[in-house]
Length: 542
Ligand code: GLC
Image 1: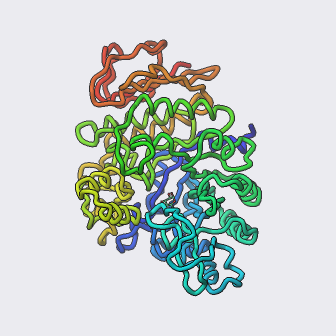
Image 2 (image 1 turned 30 degrees about the vertical axis):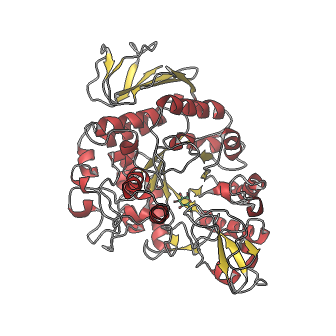
């Protein structure tokens, strides 16, 4: 593999959810200038790239995942020149800016859709997906991801349009070559502005075939992606990552083929969907079974070795905070947050750190319905109420899985509003910012922050993190997560107690003489007979 295709393999990507990261003008919403002011913090953490959730012009029905102008910045986040400044300032610190490309749908306020709605003959009409029909007789019973039907009636045209998300997010028609060309032109315009790559939102859903009720993995999916990649990404040296909820390992190998025909890597969710009742929705909670979880991780590590590339993540703006989810956000918050970081960062793939994860930020456990803002959350509440669910069950699901858990403002310090804004925050700040914040984490050498910083630096220091073969040990153990990574020269050993009880120390060859790289407790007794709650150690032999 050439240097060009390889360099990003030891990169670590930090995700910023702009509206909650740093406000610079007191309107209670984070913005680009706010991010610029925090670049030094990110440089200290050691990350290589920032994935920016969407900042383009948008009516914000889905917090920016509904774009009304792909070539302009929403005034709430700043201006195009702020974006240029962010790209330039980040570059000075060797940080790339990755834009979030939402190409499955646009906003209904996009010029294309406004035109498309004017008449069936309008040149933009075919940029979207329409079906003839009668009012009240839906083309079929497909449901949208945010609840309700996938079909919305437009009386002027006597047609329905198709939307996989909200009614304000009409699906784009990728079968139309003109639409595809417009998208390539837009992407190339951003490449010329110096962005360092892209995250492709729900890219597995672009090749929909609604008449066959196909949403993701449509028959023309990889044809479209290859054409997209050839006409855009392959012109430059970029990091690209495709979000694909429906990817199995075979498809993942296509998305992340080493020949660069599609993306650099895939972002798939199999591991992170295991704590729900199979076949049900994410709200239908089930405990995580560690043995099953380890099998899934092992499968992905083995299957993509040498022929694909995965993303490693616990968190993003759609997922709850990992320390609240699979750690213990009370008495073992620090230990469990560090354990989870160690387990993840020792694997093969590109790690993603979602803002605040490096501080061990927690879910919004005290939120009431007045506090939630997310469209998915509000619609779920409405639909489950109507379906007769108990209020307390609905709230239990939301406290566990609402997307707003991860969208509360970043905790910078213990001043008012956690240093996020001088105004009134668009969503409540988690009151535990007084204890959990960046200023505090930076000043404590054993903090969660410094554990992430260390892990990020280690990944750059030792090639075994990138190319080592993965072997899972103790696969049937219900508490331990133990694995090794090995290449010709070095071996990495990760030993973790995934739970809050004490467990016998596993026997792993070579640990006695190995160098301890990182641990979730500051004091490590090499002769200990047990691992403490959430104790994790990372060793290296080489
Ligand atoms: C992706 C985004 C999510 C958004 C959806 C529709 O899954 O991560 O936030 O709501 O796509 O664009």
